[in-house]
Length: 63
Image (cartoon, rainbow, N blue to C red):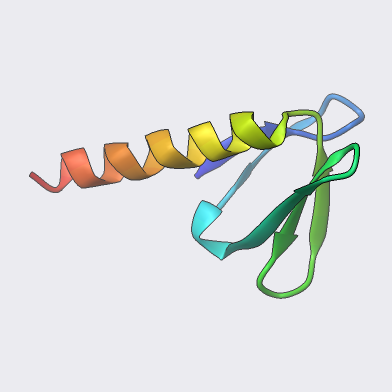
């Protein structure tokens, strides 16, 4: 799970494997495979970095 921040400054954790795409126009929006959309304060690059770090951690824990 990665933690992101809604526009009202509340934090929530989301499963990055269920993110279909990320848009930034101008707010960063996570669009899930079920069609749900979440607008977050993090930039697209920050979200991608968190996803990369999450996946690296998962891989490291399997070895």
